Image (cartoon, rainbow, N blue to C red; front, side, top):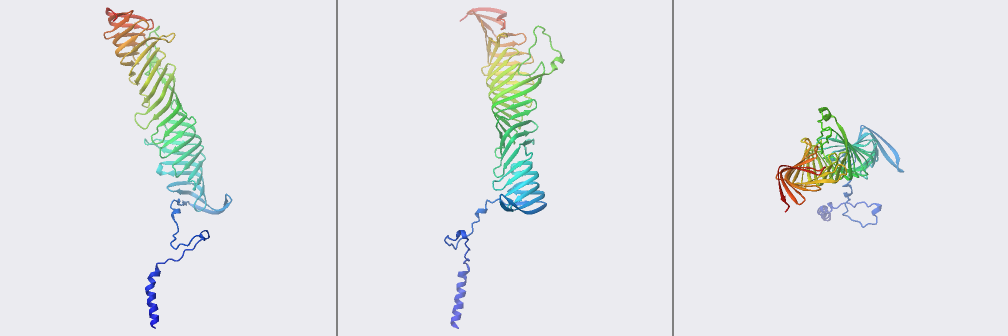
Length: 460
């Protein structure tokens, strides 16, 4: 009896010691030769990065199919079918899903990919989803839409679109089109990155806009700002309608023989001009005011009445209301046989006014052989296009074939082809200096008139 009580007492004391011991874990055949470990805990970390499976639809059909030589369970969803890849929703009229985990899926009819986090929306007639590689291939008029900050929508389409869901990257294959209210881009093969918001097209894409045609080796389009950047061998062809009395960079030449004022009807008669622009790089920005188009690196403009070159050329405003040019500026006015140069230019379209500074210079050419007849330098050069006058101010120096004239300011009258030099003007010829109240020079004739008094001095 005492022995039973002792055993019962020992059992009560020892019970808490054994209550924390777990039963042994069964070892699978792959682990049969591993050393037993009573502290083994199943590793659940492999499932941490696993993409959760979520799919559904209004109807469900289940069947067994052979897929790549293996029997698989296939689910066919209909009536607004959908799959979620993390936060990205894939939907279509019908989805054929391979396996419960939706390893593969075929989307048919009204395919939509909604990536709200990146503000990207894709549409197509057909889609192939691969969960392992985390991508979807869209075919059958695939397209995507972006909305810029200014609420302008841009449509981008291609023959095939592959969306890498985990990278926020899109590859467009075949013919690529970009369309919005401002322009249409046609190219071949493109890449888009959600992080930079930039779409890149190589292989010399083309841009069409109202009365404009552009092309370059490479195009970069910013879907957020709407900015277009063209790189390497950029050129632009533009058509415009201008009247005879145009407010472009140059002024129209009047017939000296008739020398009659044009009628209002003639001034309103539009002339269609074709202009070619070239540069190493072109950037069009329309998200900020004023809208602008910039040519960078070896910028050039060609048209039948004008040749223009500069290192940088910018057009501000939707109608090019202000034009700015910098570094190594050279403007050849073919109609008026004049070359203007300098390192900074601004042109105001509405005011019909331009000015050049930073080593400005005027070269007046012979009408017959285009040789330089006279050169004018000063501190600043102003051009009044409506008056057909070029005014130079500050330390004016006029060098012609047989003389050198100096003064404070001078005006070149384009129609009359004469220079009027004022502000204590002087003329040096044959080692003699003539001072006069006003000096009039006719470069084409190499003729000089002195008026308002004359004083002759020997050259120093």
